[in-house]
Image 1: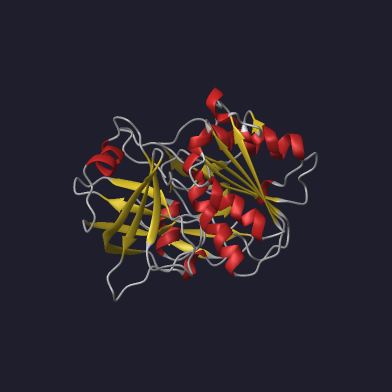
Image 2: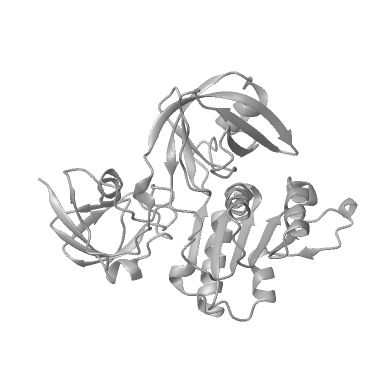
Length: 342
């Protein structure tokens, strides 16, 4: 049986086949619903069911608490229609313009910076991956599992796909990358995926909040903005435990030095005595709170650990008047075997 879904306020309609989730069907038909993890964990695909009924399972309670379910809120990556639906959700402009592909790639270069491996993947000569800065790809493993990683380069710089992979002790994939992966190895991936990318139809100033390798997609977005000559004010807060964890701090500082509209503010939560750290300390989202009393005129792009993304969303929207629809996020969830995260 096929159920029909109407999206408000756009008026777009699409069909959902048996056993499909609303998100799966929307993506298949190039309807730009927002999404992130596609696994019921991040809440990025949240919207309201105003007419009809859905079943939902496999989600994490923190992503969709009971108080929201009572109000008709659904996670569309987990929601399967039981009837025709009308839903309210903020669509992502242009998300359906880019084709999702499954492609082979070759490991062209592996460089290690502190505990982060920077992979550069080469596509076949006849292929190029069209993507939006900030999106991610799924590495497809031989055992059928997938590992999701953000693309760290900008679309104009597409000779390689750049990934930043943090070493997770005991994690099957990161251990493989750090200890066994060889250059010229062949892998397969699917992408681009995700709705974490710059909304270029806005002229609002931007605050980026990154933790750890959440810097990777932010790097791609900022490099894209520089290439496009975007002059909006951009402030990058990058949180890490120690100074060494700011694995590309010189690059970020270089953006600030070269571009008057870009400010870089590193924040350490557990600086070491030998760091002699003169800069900001504490939680990275709190640094934003300390600097901005009113975020009502801003856009925020937050990427990294789920606890940081959740704290930033709650604090900025409830205490600093940031509009809900101006907070864009991508939370990096570890897989069950700690083998893959963005």
